[in-house]
Image (tube, rainbow, N blue to C red; front, side):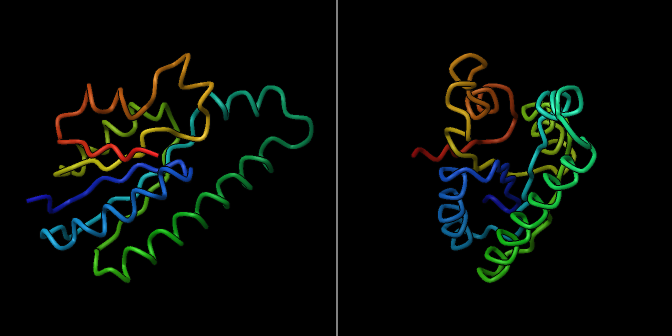
Length: 144
């Protein structure tokens, strides 16, 4: 039923908890997982503007950390028998998730209910909530 899963992650604890649910979908016929991490351009712009030191070096460290985290997730999902495609995008998380949903023609989106910044979510609204309202695919929101 859900052949291709989109798994947006910010590497938060609740986001990582979603991996266990994704593994359960394998038993139902899921084959492929698209693991997506979005570097929020709003935060990256702040680094470029306000960072003391070399902002390019900071961005590279953030990118390297994200690549490492994605590799760990990718390996775990491959051990469970999934085909895995990992990607890093830079932009507004909601918009990038919606773009990948369309580009990859996913069957379901599995996302954590809260990201790393609860304070930010109080003001901006949770990304997961916005994804659930705006996407075309079914959404499985994993609670804490």
